[in-house]
Image (cartoon, rainbow, N blue to C red; front, side, top):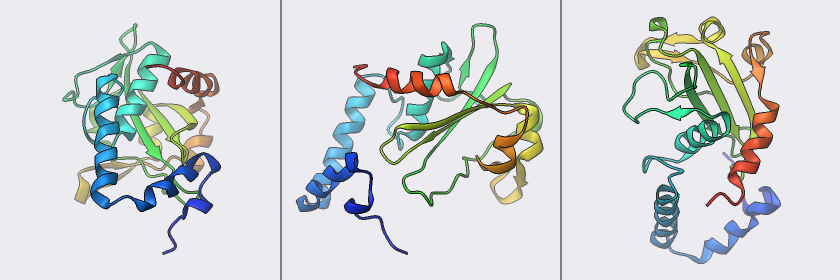
Length: 182
């Protein structure tokens, strides 16, 4: 499998090549420092890979939602009217990146009202944001026994479904929210 090299990445990511002279330990130290700073700014809520935490923070901040406790099962945020939102994100680091979202558990128990899907581009910029009602999620998700949950791909029929709404305005607001927000 061919790996992306700095020259195949977008221009804003070319600084990655400057890290090639660093030891593995030094690169991991930079990663940890970045995670700690994002936690300090309350953008991340855990030390996991930041994709999900960052998407949750952006969605809540932009759409005026209240984030639930990290241990809350079934949904991540609540709107002022009580609407429950499950937020899933995927980092599309390369054009061939997989659009499969993380597993959705207990879908038959109505754990949320809407699924918000955030797709990040190679530089963690928001490329797409979608709001999908739970009925549409059920229609397109596939139950997989060995993960005890439903899998969903953020592409094709799901995104073309009449119930799915692309949040163009939110995509723009996400970009504005992320710039200079420390």
